[in-house]
Amino acid sequence: MKKTPGQRLSSVIIYAILIVIAAGTLFPFLYIVGVSLTTQSEVLRRGIVFIPEQPTLEAYRTVFRSFGIEQAYQVTLFRTIVGTLLNMVFTVIPAYVLSKRALPGRSTLLLLVVFTMLFSGGLIPTYIVIKSLGLINTIWSLIIPGLISVFNLVVIKGFFEQLPVELEESAKVDGAGELTTLLRIILPLSLPSIATIGLFYAVGHWNSYFDAVMYINDSNLLPLQVMLRNILLSVQFVNAESGLSEDQYVSSTAVQMAAVIVSTLPILCVYPFIQKHFTKGVMLGAVKG
Image (cartoon, rainbow, N blue to C red; front, side, top):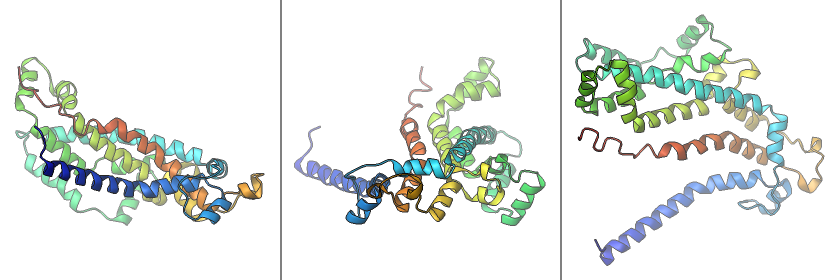
């Protein structure tokens, strides 16, 4: 259909507004990248830097050379990958069970599950439980206490309930059990919700630092975000040890910005691979034929 002049004008205005909003959201990120690649003398001379005149990677070398961030990367990667996998297993299975309307005591179970979302034991009782289980100062103290997010469980349960009952009935007619139905029928059709919830879990693990501050004392088990916090709070000039000339010195601000990029870039790279599942209409025509 051909657009009227008024509709074309509206489209131009909407796109212009979206471009301005996108530029506004990119402004802080571009500034962080620019400063992280800039020498101290140029930052002092220019103030706000987006495109460095003489780019340098010295701030990134300083981050990896002086703060032991490689070990923190390993801890965070292990926590994110293993933690997300366990999260999905312990969330999807209860959600599938609770989506069964014929489940005996379903209403009571749902009430108990939602109750834990509204009320918690508190910080000190939780710490006592973690300590009594022997999880203090172990990587599992960052994974096991948050195995199930009730909010994510309720979201996936609602998605399962929207799937046509005919799919499960057909699977049962063909001799499939509950586990086979879940793995072969339900999960493939639920990729958008699974991918979204999995991304929520992964980002939560990647960005979390408070539980590590509470439960971890060993510096070799500190995750990336705690290391980033330590860098932001305690970074000092290390130019004297770098062997650089004075005009190549990097400031503590540049090191801080580099640390932010180092801790943020990996999780940003995941979004393009997950985003396609958000709007994918996998249910179109699922019951036809």
